[in-house]
Amino acid sequence: MPRSNAFSSTMTYQKEVLVTLNGHTFSVTENLYTALLYLQNRQLERTIRIDALCINQYDAAEKSKQIPLIRTIYAKAAHVVVWLGEGTEDGGKALEGIRFLAGKDTYSKAVCETHRYACLKLLQREWFRRVWVLQEVGVAQSIYIMCGYVQLSGHIFCEGLNKLELPLNLLKKVGPVICLIKDAPFRPKFETNSRGAFSLGRLIGMYRDYRASQPHDKIYALLGLSADVDSADLQPNYGIAWHQLLKVATSHIFPKSSIQTWEGTESAVIKSKGWILGHIHSVAQDITGFGQRITLLLNDTAESLGYREIWQSEWVVETCAELIKDGDIVCLLQGRSEPSIIRLCNDHFTVITPSVQPQQRNQTEGLKPALQIRRDIPGLHDILLTLRLRLVEGGLESNIPLGLMDMAPEYRETHTESELRLNHIALVVVGIAAKARNQNPKSRGLENILGQSGTCNPVIEVLKVAAANPGSYGDRIIQILLHQRHESLAVSEGVVKAAAGDPEDCGHETLRLLFQQRGESLPVSEEVVMAAAGNPGDCGHKTLRLLFQQRGESLPVSEDVVKAAAGNTGYYGPRIMEVLFQHRGEDLPVSEDVVKAAAENTGFHELEITEVLFRHWKESLPVLPVAEKPRHCSG
Image 1 (tube, rainbow, N blue to C red):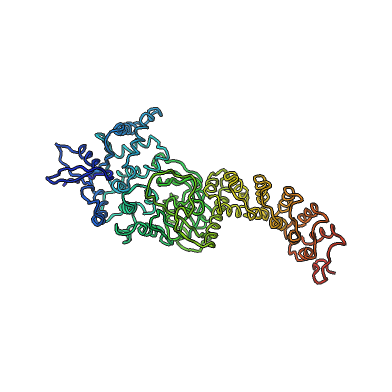
Image 2: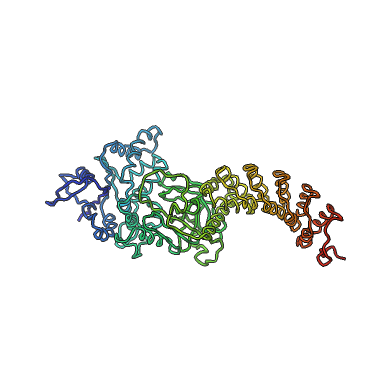
């Protein structure tokens, strides 16, 4: 018995038309009626499976029973016929142009542009954005594309499109479904109880923005393509509320995480622990596979876990619903076997794709990452993420990252939890900055990630950590942020204090940049001067001189400042005390407590500090009781 064909088209609600089949009358949409007119052949009888006729779309119980069968039906079909609509608006011309390009090994740009407009218009038709068509072509072994009377194979369709080099904004929308069509000839023969090739996480990463008449279909339409659908909770059930289904699916993808969802929202909040493994250094379009080619900078944590030995530094990944960008972060959450790509989104992280398949090195087939053996690897972060499945398409997409309260208005946390979240973000960003500066100073990833960090607390926390962290990258972070944010970036006293107290060279440079950008508005308090006076690094004296240069007589130099200098354990502690005397002279408040701080200094240069005090104050220097004199001076 010959195999039947299966039919794939959009089933959006339209005006209905009555048709008669084998003596029975059926109600079908105008789109389906038109397709049947083009498909009919009075000289050839053939059987075509049409879901719009076989499944009552208004009966939730029937849909729940029929959905698990769709994979088998389309996988066993002799051909799957994709109906894009009538050949109007240059639709037929577009398919002919695609056929022409597919047959040419060489062609001029002018020839390509001749067909470009009609082809791009064709790709904006509704079929390319509906979620149910994914399973229909995702399991098929032979696909034909029809637009009006023009028909061509799926293979030729993809070959021709490949030569058009689709623009990124269109690739983001249609690239994932075109990949499914392209792979059809290479699929193995269907076997009963076989599974799909993708994890549910990868499928949601690619197809979460595809349109569905019911929100549940954003999950259920992907099950036939998924390799991990044993969970009873994921079996089609239209009686469950959408936010509950979203929680179940998200929990399935992130099994060791705490998931929260709310009625009426599009996002799930994921509280988890995970390892930051690196970030995306560069992204290019994969012209051969309708995907993206990404280059990674893996960090020391990835090396500790063994992934540097196993993974290549360049991956080819499927086009995601949200295109991967420079500066996106590669992380591995607890309980996961595949890494995720996430992005800093104002005051939290958002999931770009829950799962991505890394390219393995050929010679490391037998190696296993350390994570499978032990769980005490350092670098484990608390990570809060959102995963958004848009229910309504349309509207302008803002370039400004949405805050956590915009993504999940019902989410609640304590002030302490909020501070911890922001601190963890800062640590992640600074770690990425360190790697970017060390491995590739020209990386745009750092600029992108700082540009995604909002304008409030997260940026300030990043500034604090960057200013206080060792390494030459702190100044670069400050420079990028100040350039991007200009006057909208609030530089707090805490940031200035952190820079003044930074024992590395970058602290002085950071403070110089802050003065350059903010001038008189920069908050320089007594606490800031104390931090500089107590700075044990090689540039502490330079930092203090910079403060005097910028503030002069108005610089607050109190007894506590002098005590901080007297207790400075660094090599340049004596020079810091000299700087104070140079600028304040006899007005410098040197008390008995200052002398005591010098006496109790545990560094190797406490005698030199005492000598500086004695040289400037001589007989006026307060004398400590004998028991409190420095032991180096006794006898």
